Image (tube, rainbow, N blue to C red):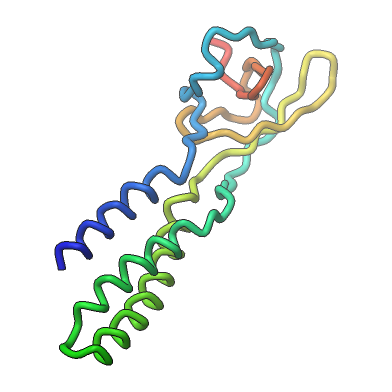
Length: 151
């Protein structure tokens, strides 16, 4: 049973790193010490969206392994152990898939902004900074884009 707990803990640690935070105030190390363009703009519209990371299959794999190990501990005798492992792997695989989906999904906002030259752009970003339609802001772009308030 100790092996099962170890596999489950290992799987939880790996799954918890599935999603990259898309918050306005979050920066990847690769974006530090880089130059980006900045353009004044006005928010035209805001709508809530859901951002999903691509399905890697790691949740199902780790869940099936952990479930198989846990299931093999059930009963005595080789048949019971094999059946328990198969059942545990099936249940663990389904649970791992559900967990990965939940851990790799986050709420976001899609902004449509109008630049001073009249062109419009869209940016999807996290919900840590919420802008309103009509608000003056800055569109920062380079490797990544974000919209921040013009304070």
